Length: 452
Image (cartoon, rainbow, N blue to C red; front, top):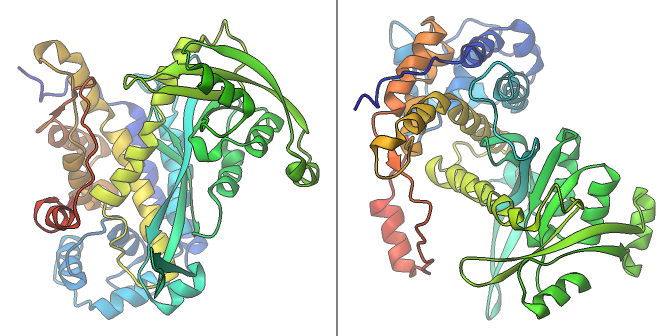
């Protein structure tokens, strides 16, 4: 059918992206900003600054020694004699902020470049962003415990006497373009709403933020209104009185503006933050395909520009951030951390965020080809993300360290992306099942396929 042949031109923004990443990796100023001490990465050794960074980006579930042997065999003409201990010392010289800067200065400009085709997706000239948090279990080492603290394990009988380190990750995520704009890794004791406020500096004027029930409170709404940002939040049955009334009516398609006053126990906090004590918001009710009533609260007040019936599809896009965390923890095996220090944990996390963004951008041309050929298939198709992540990890050296022209690397990746597309059945509903511990163990041990 010709589906595996690239017919659409590769956007110049992707070529510029790879060239910018290569330039940063070999830039002495970039290296100076992201090393621990001025004398780090100054001697001519096997584990140079770009090699260390790319080794972390290509995180694998293989043993450290095997990964080093395979990786360095591609870098050097002769085998380099590097031990796991030497690798541990080398990565301790690198700051995790290097991955943050590459994402901010190279990837995000490419994601929203004006010259790319097709243009970045949006809704009514808005970017649709989602904020959510997730908990990750960390390796149990003293350095990590000092940085992130311990969580006590309890059951129906109370405290079990067991503790483990845990962190909270929070991402500001463009759900239509699959781009992580900002990411945070903090101790799990830091609240998800507090982290949501830290993402505010990355918003643009026309952004609409989607959040789940745990965020739908007066303080968050007031903060967004004060910052001139729009938000759509799902309400629980016990939240605002206006939401409770809509749940009692149990009628879909309802929309009403409501003036909210600050709860008395939150007024001191609001005044300290300079936030308003009364706000005007809009509540809308929707009927899900399951028959359940859903109530949303939003700052998008104009019912003509933002009809009530459109909010069902808009809020459904929030699920994209849930699948994003699934990619981080599942396909990229985030919780299988490659080091036992707090800095190693941060390196792995921010490298995974960078890799996800690269995958979203570089699979764009291949997905466009599949879209153009959708009439030849029973169902729409898209790139298999397990294959695309594996391709990126396998060719990370050629892409960011080698001297192969960037356009040739992109074309090579497209052929790999198109080799095994998957069908998209949007109307398919798979019921959730609570797996037994045995079945879960069986899946993790014998069924689950690791990306790399």
